[in-house]
Length: 253
Image (tube, rainbow, N blue to C red; front, side, top):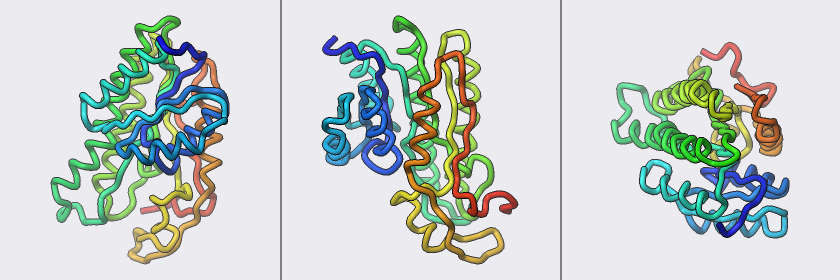
């Protein structure tokens, strides 16, 4: 092993938005972080921004929807550090708005492949590593969405994927109990990232109107993730929702 730090994390989707912000915060808290994402230049930029924060940031270009690519990521973690203490399953994507009867199959598959199958592949490899390492165990935090509770109009693929994430979170929590593996989910409502810029300008509502929706600073999400990550393995936040107070979630639909 090249290194043997006390805490090692993998963050998927680490090249931008929430993934980048969480990666930098973990490094600032002393974690060694493997930065996973498809765009090498974006991962390098995250690592550059984290220079001098504390823990090292290692870019590992990864396509979470590709089984071999995911396996290589976790092999890298095992070889470089000998263990994994945290997986933040954050990578995700959306599809253009479309009624369910007009949603192309390729768009459906692209969303499910990243948001759900990719999360499964990363979870599977994390559990395998966490079971065999010494001391065993670790934590998995899945980035869900408020769409895991209530859908937006014209978003069947994204909604289905995030409902699936909730099922995966529950199943992983159950399967991990006997191996000191904790799994929780953070559901986020309108964090101020590039992904939600359109929502701030105007989002389609169930009544057919288009209205701007409030957003929250990414730092509020980061604090939630770091709190979940800080717990001992005999304690778990099973589900956390962090959202803009005035966004139209409750009563939606």
